Image: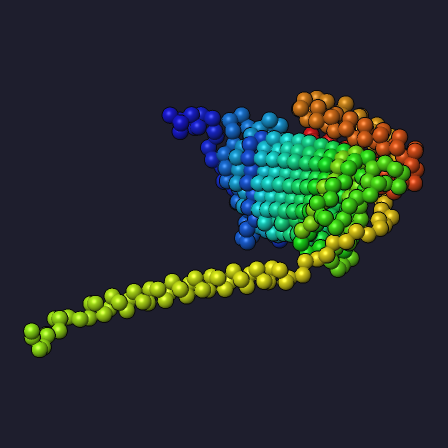
Length: 274
Length: 149
């Protein structure tokens, strides 16, 4: 009965293949459903999956690139896409969940949940109201959400993580440069800038929870215009701001030139040692 | 009383069980000894490894990366965002439009408060940086919206 029901709901499975030149573009538009992208060492792209009844699957391919689209704008599908690692992916979704491993490119969803992992060259991920989770090894990553939660881990040299109301959680290691910025979201930063990295955390009204990296050597400056700074490190205590309002705290840890700067307007900051 | 007693028929099982019992105690003893040594070594290493010292210092001037063009372009960005929202009203899902409008309101109220405080403390670099970030969030929101259709 279940199989019969599924046959009524789903169209027959699809499968397409295309050999690609290195660096080929892979463009996907997928309004709803789920898409799982897997980077592999073969030179061929393979798309497998099912498209919901009422939705249409479009596929165009040549050696230099592939375009996959599910129409109309409310169309839904469940796709597994195997992509040569050297390709550049560009995927746009509305509500479809995106899961990708070992693939570089641009990942966008309106309210999609985006989950990216593996080893990549570069990544850009955006969602207006969905959660974005990234745990990759990469030279640089740009991630942006509106309301969704943004979680960044792995090993990334250059990170930019921004949100408007969404919480931001950064545990990335081997940071050389990190920009974490949000208007109202809470920030938990436990990334490690080592002895040379630069980290800027700006939060207008959210709470910032800062854990100094285990390998950090350098300086940390914290300023809150109206908020309270709480130090869980016994040797350092916040002082009143120069204007008599807010608080500041500056500390030096180990040896190095790393610099972590935290600024908040009315959100509090909690700092703890490694 | 007999002057001689015949030895038991087979002495070996008894001898073997005594030897094996001794060996078992030796193995157990060695394992406990090694574990105790490892625990002592771990405690000593942990206590003697220098942890990075954390000391309080005088705050340096907070770095501010402020683009003076940000403030002047904010009104234009705001206008473009509102126009884009109106233009896409039919295309966007209601919840998406609501999320964008809520985000815009959040940014605008932050900008209003930051500007008011900047008027009182015009040379505060942290405020200047936070204001620049707020402008930049509005530009980001416009980019997010542009990709939404």
